[in-house]
Image (cartoon, rainbow, N blue to C red; front, side, top):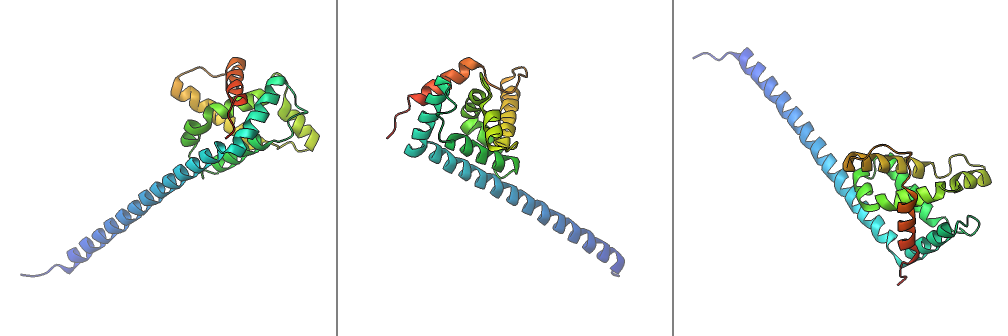
Length: 180
């Protein structure tokens, strides 16, 4: 019996490549799973922060002022800054946008819509701060949430804001939040 060393070398090379590619695929899969788990944990922590007594106070105060149409009385931009942070993390793919949509979608579109209509308060804040990029990631995030709404709910495209009635409903609920 003779051993064909060329065949052995060829099969060894093929097996080595298959093993290397399989290992890379397994590492890629594990990395994606770890990223999704980290994103889920971060969204859960953000929801806890969003529901904290301090943030509930801010949400209540902001929504009350928005319902009264008082831009000057919105002394704290904490709620918008919170969503701006989420938008920045989602844009960089740190947070999974579908998880963000599920956890915060209605609030994002309602606060954003209320800030844009009937008066464009975001533009007023940009002009006041001389910062054209102020709340840019919130604006981007709202667009992604609206896109996911349309994709999941099968509704037609709109102008990127919720209806005034939906905004008012959310804000009315926010204005009546209990602060524990």
